[in-house]
Amino acid sequence: MYVSDLIEDFLEHLEIERGRSQKTVENYRLYLERFLDIALEITGKDELKASDIDKELLRKYRLKLNRYGSSNGGDDLKAITQAYHLIALRGFLKYLTKREIKSLDPSLVELPKVVRKQVTFLHYDEVEEMLDQIDLSTESGLRDRAIIELLYSGGLRVSELVNLNRDSINLAKKEFMVRGKGSKDRPIFISDACADRLADYLDARTDSLPALFLNNSRNLQAVDTSGDYRRITARSVERIVEKYARMAGITKHVSPHTLRHSFATDLLMNGADIRAVQSLLGHADISTTQIYTHVTDAHLKEVHKKFHSDTK
Image (tube, rainbow, N blue to C red; front, top):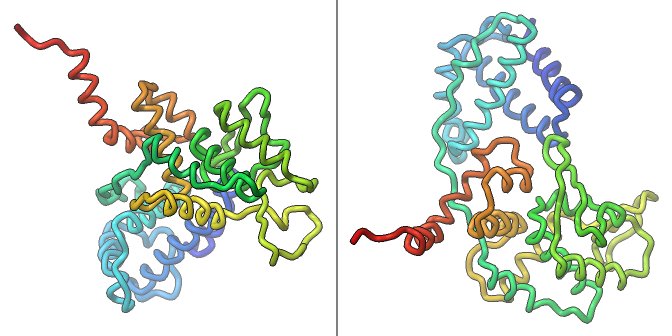
């Protein structure tokens, strides 16, 4: 069977059977189609069969991938981007193995070592300084305050936040469910202050639109009848967070994900179990959560100093 056809089968498998998001499927398509293009260039063939994928083709592909940008007049692909390509290829090969289609053993696809970026987070007083910059006399100000409170209090991804509806949350119980990556549901818990700020914003609204957060731009036009035309976008939320970080005099780059980092870091620094933090963040793999542990080193030093007795 030709690889081009099998890629389409694999992408359908990801979407339907594995429940992957459209964005994930699009990324896998990009990586696998790039693999196919490079493989055809290496082999000189018009079509590639699954059985053509062997260790030598993999070796040459990795070399081409490492030089991909330079050979196309651009920048080289970063190690993490190369890793994403190889993860997609390994997933594809696992799919072929499951279907008993002869090809390369997926275990032979080794991923490059990637140095993760240092996690940027805000201390509680920096978050407070951002909140103090917000003018609460306007509906937009009430919205912005509620957004930042919710990102920090609940640890949401920005994509999760913008998809929330009014009926998604329970302000009385101060908890609700959110659907995250991989269509997995997880509970979100919010503070009393966050619940109050959300209530303030909703009380100020005079519309009946379902979206929890609205874009207040006067240039918006009703382009559909679903009631979603004013739903705030992820990019708008990014601008809101960047705006108040700048007004607060915070020089490091601050994004909605920075507030998610801050949520996780605050939990760990206050003694939360890493497994609990993993669940609250919705991480499928504990190793993803462990990127936060190094930022608590200074805190651990203080714990050691306070609780570990010196020898006489």
